[in-house]
Image 1 (tube, rainbow, N blue to C red):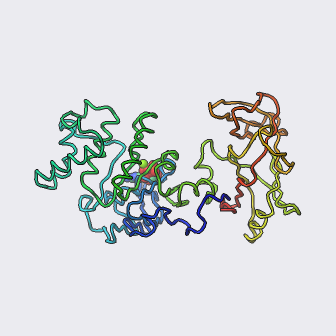
Image 2: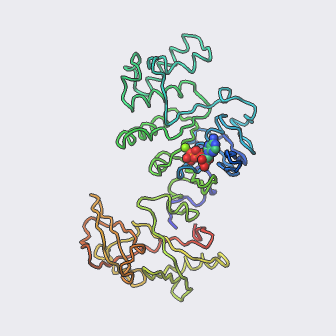
Image 3: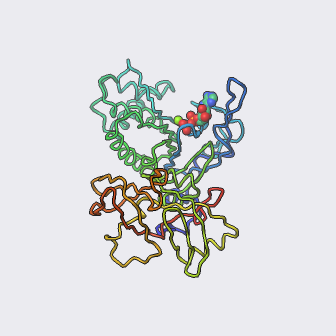
Amino acid sequence: MSDTADRSREEGEPRNEQGRDSKVSLAIEGVTKEFTEDDGSTVVAVDDMTLDVYDSEFIVFVGPSGCGKTTTLRTVAGLERPTRGEIRIDGDSVAGREPRERDVAMVFQNYALYPHKTVRENIAFPLVIRKFPDDVVEERVAETVELLGIGELLDRYPSDLSGGQQQRVALGRAIIRDPEVFLFDEPLSNLDAKLRIEMRTELNKLHDRVGKTSVYVTHDQAEAMTLADRVVVMNDGRIQQVDVPEVVYERPANRFVAGFIGEPPMNFFDAEIDHAEDGLRVRTDAFELVLSPSVAETVAERDGADIVEVGVRPEAFEAVAHVDTAVDESRLVEAHVTVIEPMGSHHDLTLRPVGAGDDESAEYTARVSKDTDAVEGERIRLAVDTEEVHLFDATGENVLA
Ligand code: ADP
Ligand code: MG
């Protein structure tokens, strides 16, 4: 719905110059991974996944716990064998290759440094077991610690390091091998919130400097949105959408993506739709909106699109007193304010539709200016940005995406 996305771009193509013209570094081709449980039942952890990752791209898989992120990475690394499908690294099938023969390095959540080795020895280890000559090892260790800014830690032991320093050493152990592809499995999730954000920035800078193809897995959408060239949203073993962060946010492919990306989450309302003279009339228990004729046209083009639900992000509401121009009735909403949460830069309001009585389940969230003089227990008038409204059909697909 937004005009910030580059519409000339093929859907799912990388936006960065480096990606667009460059080779496919990692190809996941129709990969399915099934596990057999003790009782003989089958779990499909990864379900027919196909994805090309371009050279030097930073791809982030995001999805809820259990959706198959780790299994995907382990399959690429060679720690799991796919039930069906194929993995190619730099063009070649890696089916017959052991993990250490694949040109990948993996950084885990539990990065488990060797406690009785120094930082220097920990970082050097991947080269030492591959029998690199001493002078090469020394040179590469020096380059690696310089890159990570941990030169002064070389002779320390892991127990003398902070969590952030340990994580840098674990990164160093991956970087030193100079692999074709980096695989990261929630590498920051053991760190506290502040450090996690610091390390996120570090990883961004590091990727800018090293420029290596990276596949990063997280359940944290903020991490995904800030790190990714392209985001892969997963649920239930399946890819839901692959695109640049802006598009995943502004034009979520389906209800799952719409509800998963964005904080506070998008509000969903059961909706009835009428095609009217002035546009598309959307009726819910919370409000009635008229969407622009262009939206009506898009919906009409989607022959038989059976819209059952409307989605509005909290930030698509604005308190009427703070809207400059006169607001026409077609986008006005009235509600009771049940909770005001001042967030510093803005307020999050919990709202209950006027007709909802004491039905808590009808409540929804609006994110409004901190200057809004909302009062708990009183009514408030809001305007909806009707360009930011999402419509979902019975299958959950976003009709406007
Ligand atoms: P995520 O990393 O997204 O949390 P996983 O890839 O770890 O998800 O798991 C995906 C699904 O596969 C889950 O249902 C999980 O229980 C199942 N699973 C993962 N590994 C195994 C295994 N070794 N044996 C049986 N089931 C597994
Ligand atoms: Mg996992």
